[in-house]
Length: 142
Figure 1 (cartoon, rainbow, N blue to C red):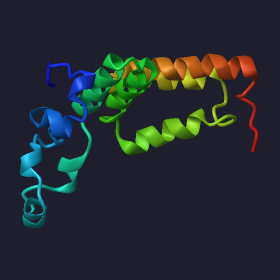
Figure 2 (figure 1 turned 120 degrees about the horizontal axis):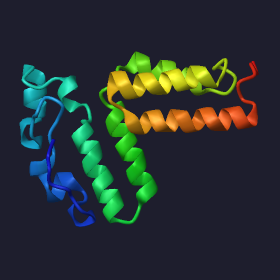
Figure 3 (figure 1 turned 90 degrees about the vertical axis):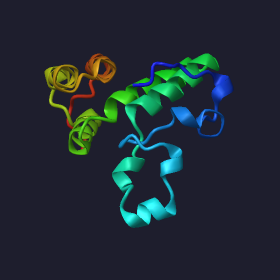
Figure 4 (figure 1 turned 120 degrees about the vertical axis):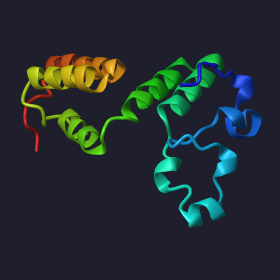
């Protein structure tokens, strides 16, 4: 992870601080072109957003006074390494009426924290469990 924290003055990073931008495979922006894509030197996986890039965006947002946006970027950074099928299973579980009870959401939060090192997302799911419990959203609705 890059330890330098970009500021709002660095935005957009691709233009003002391109040396900080790296793809999932470690490729710099200059390494990515139609030619490198065509030759196979760079693949679509190299173009995925990285947790580091999302944390950089969080730093910029926080510096610009947009704390809520920064929090969203930080949660997204945790999600960037969680397998897509796992994310979709939690998404389905969080739909009102899908989880059978608070314990099911709390177990999902524990798995996020322990198996995927995602404490921010886990806290979000725990908060949802409390809200769903208060509002009676564990009843099957559809």
